Length: 335
Image: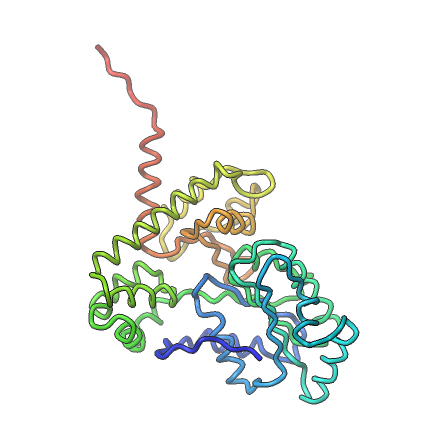
């Protein structure tokens, strides 16, 4: 079975749930990849969609918790099967009992870094899910580097859970959410908290809760300080090998472009495609712990590099301006 933490106060995400429900079509054998930023609410959205579809049985949740685990072997452990033959038979028997395909959820937590793990998920999703139709396979990825490395021979359907949209932020439930977690102070500083969090539900909750014990100014300064550190780590990617196998030193260039673009438009990855890909950027961001810039992918054909929040966007502008000023040649005085 699959469970997710259920918030006491939920912010409705109607469009996310509509899409999730459509992805759970068991007549479509395409594997499903669900991904998004850390704390975006992916697990709860999937749990809710499964509940709404009436899928409470016949779900196997396989959590690949470390770099040594392989999807197929971990599934066998979950099913109590000695090997592939027994595992396949168990899935076939489940399908007969349920009169539908069982659902296998492969979850790749944020901490996993070995690409062998996602390759094992890709292979399993294609062979056991798409080719053999033994189960509806859903891969839940908590990092862009893993999601962008997933490839079930292009048979998969992808869905990135985005931060709250501007329209979603206007819902009355957002105010109720903030009041529940942070009291009157959180409600008073709603626009500021959205500015700092970028609409990431988990981060919004953390900021609101912090206001229970700290002043808003203390919370703001701590958040800005952490965001500045992430930006410096992003700049440091160039010194750590850059992007991709050609080690392209373009972190400061990407930061400059993201800072110059409007926050909600971001920068198209196509502008850098001849030197490195979205996957290369995501891998470097994960390795460096520099999540100030992330990959937004409405479709596989439209991937963009975006600032994590409006406050990060403003900091990128300030930091890149300072870098530019420091690298301009100094004019020598005339004596």
